Length: 117
Length: 110
Image (cartoon, rainbow over all chains, first blue to last red; front, side):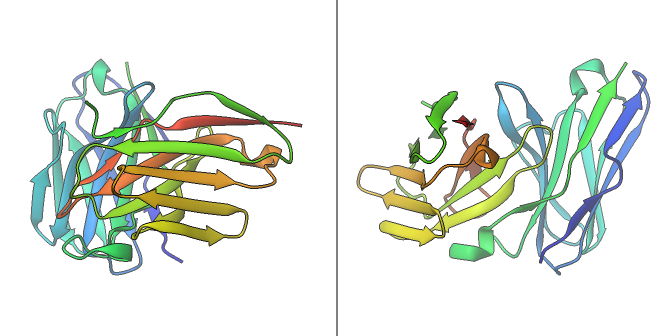
């Protein structure tokens, strides 16, 4: 089974702090994703990575950056946390995106509920 | 028009009935379709994938795909209270673009 883990389940930070969220997958997947999920808005893609050191912006990248130094690890960074970044953050991974079918099944970590005060 | 549309619900069904969850998508190039179940406070869990027109069955779950109508559905037979959750429809239309619907909340009444 694919296992995706996230560094924290709950996190409380203050406005202006730098926040690191970490995600690790153990299935040698090429692709990793960061989403945020808010009531009424659904899942929104922040950034994704299709290879080590490669990243692409998703739908809402403003205020976030990412890092992928190793294939199994994908970090989301909030450079200066703001209250509107209070949300559930979900990491996911998939085998590949350039092929159809099961290669694009995404598997999610347990999520990090971030509160910015 | 949203790329993936679902009725947010809640959809209420009695225990033992068939729950029918529906999803439409706007992009005809969508190739792969997924259903996720998400319990309150938890992360989405993949339960079904479907790639070609027709039905795909897995236990009590049946996914149905009609690409001509741009419609995908999930049927849950013999619904149980433990099936109460939000069900997310997702479509892959090439490269990195997996788009999720907002989800339909299902309530199974004992």
